[in-house]
Image (cartoon, rainbow, N blue to C red; front, top):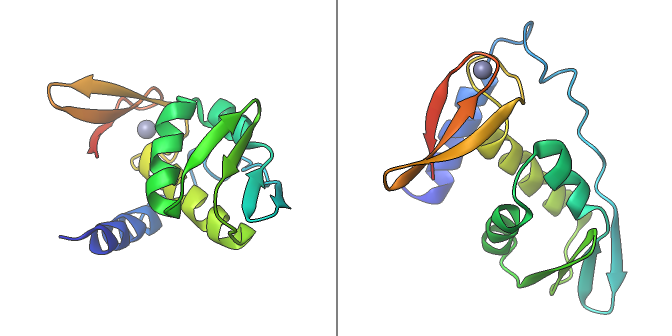
Length: 135
Ligand SMILES: [Zn+2]
C-alpha cells in the first residue's frame, strides 16, 4: 500500500467516527498563521500546535518535512519552511497530522499520547484506553 492509499483509508476510518460523543467537535483547532520571507514560508504559530496537540515539536517537524517536501527549522514559536507554500496546503497537512497522530478513532477525543512498543509506535487514548499502531 502506498502512502496515498494509506491516507485515504485513514480518512475513511475517520469519517466513520461517532459524531455525537467525544471532544473532537469541541476541540478547537487553532488557525495557522503564515507569513512569507522571500522564498520561505514562516509558520508563525507552529509551537502552539505542538502544545495543543501535546506532541514533541521534533516529531511534528519530521512529519511536516516529509509531507511538505522541504527543509524546516524551528525558530522559537515559529517554523521556517524553506519553500513557498500556500496556507491551505499546510492546513490540509496539519489536519492529516491531527487525524493520524492526535485524535482517538474510537471515541474522538484528543487526550492521547504516543508510546514506543518494541519496534513501533502506538497512539494511546487516555479517555477510553484504545490503542492503535501508528507509523
Ligand atoms: Zn478514545
